Amino acid sequence: MSDATLSARALETLLGDWRGAARAAAYLALAERVRLLILDGRVSVETRLPAERELAERLGLSRTTVTAAYRHLREQGLLRSVRGSGSVARLPGAPAAMPVPPAALHLDLSKAAPPALPWLAEIAREAADELPAHLGDSGFDPIGTPALRQAIADRYAKRGLPTSPEQIMVTIGAQHAIALLSRVLVGRGDRAVIEAPTYPHAYEALRIAGARLVPVPVSPHDADPGAVAEVDALEQAFARANPSVAYLMPDFQNPTGRSLDESARERVLDAAARQGTVILADETTAELDIDRPFSPLPLAAYGPPGTAVLIGSVGKTVWGGVRIGWIRAEPALIRKLVAVRAPGDLGTPILEQILVTRLMPRMDEILELRRTELRAGRDRLEALIADAFPDWHVPRIDGGIATWIGIGAPVSSQLALAARSQGLLIAAGPRFGIDGAFERFLRLPICQTIPETEAAVQALRVAWESMAGMPVVDAGLLPAVV
Image (cartoon, rainbow, N blue to C red; front, side):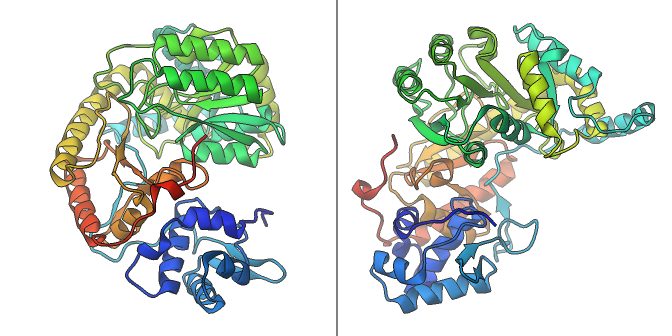
């Protein structure tokens, strides 16, 4: 069981305005907010919650109210009692991460991922026909087939970054790559710079490796070109914290959609090189341009060899169900990664590698399809949000898979709960930060179909209207982002 323990003070910060989250008894309102925190990952599974008496005193409640809330969560399968350890967060069943909403409509916009390529089944059949040629080997492949490593290297070369197959390691998706790099490059207590907001599973992987996170605010997509303030903050963080690694998304950052221009890339890599910091550059959305006014090279092209390690996958281009990712790094680091991989897994599936090897030469065609879909999704979402929520701020992103919407009030978690009752699953803003920040923001994908977008915004409108009259958190009480 995890040693993680959540203090009453920390849980109070995460709860925010839980009293306004539901028109129900206090214990139900409290239970609903804790449920959301567990389901969207802000309270990790196996984390020990505060003792009932401690939480009651912190929140100014009777112990009976907290006891009833905990009991309700246990009945839902979200808490379990452990003798000597109190109440521990869990998820009901497996692999479900959240209960299906009761409404007939069930849209999951908590995941920003496009549907599968229309010709994916055909390519899969071709890959299966090729499989017999590989059956003479053990099938345990910790580094990647020579053909796929060459195809990935060729793609980098086409993008302007000469790469050899010896610089490529094939992984089971980008998340696997992030976790593996964290294990190799981060020691317990090392500092790791992250963007704020950022992709939550990345900072979770760094935390599991023992990193102390140093968040740096990300400039909004519609800020001044160059994101000068953000780059200044990164330079200062590298100099002051001396981090071992920094996890960055230089292109179409998730969730803000921001891209760093070439000058910013050079400055960031120069600052990292001075401190010996390795940048883990997540490029899973790097080629999903819609109408970006510049075409940068992969991040590693802007600095000394070894300063930037690149992470890629086909999850945002081909399909999330094809679990193939990769790491581009110097051969010495690739060898270290291979050496430590076995305790976690014994290799990447061969059939999926064959499939992706066949798709890599068609990547330009795939990207053109995705860009057309993303352009339509972005334009339709912008129009619908402008009509339904004229006071919300929707930056006009020029690529990527999602937009980071300013909703004008610190009620993102409340809205996520209200949306569930309408059959809509969305990721509240705080899911992308640490310590409960970003309640004024909501991430919505632009990669779903147009009918799904229209149904989602309609459900969101009903959820928003259902919150009318509920109190909201005073902005001055929200935790600062540093």
